Length: 102
Image (tube, rainbow, N blue to C red; front, top):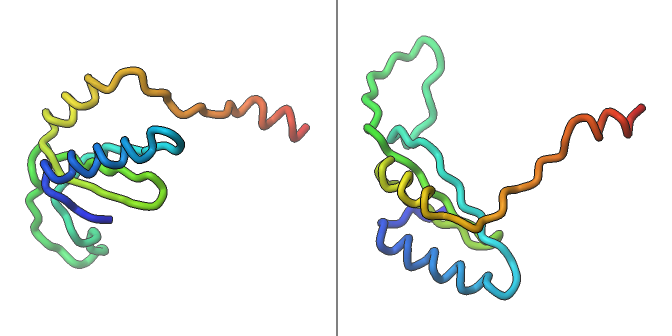
């Protein structure tokens, strides 16, 4: 996973979209980011940590190449609002699974 600056992330994301236009797909995920680069310590070890305010981690992958960046929460909401025409992943219902096992 490569953590890029915002401008270079957008250019790499454009390249991924162009590469996968004919065949393939690009997966984009958004996640709240608190600024930690190390895992949360176990009980008994107290460490004071101030989380970064309103940050979001954006990841993109085409299956082979993975890129990511950290942006403000407002920027991620803007991106999310203007992503239209995208297909959501179909979720399989639990009722079909239970009928098949009976």
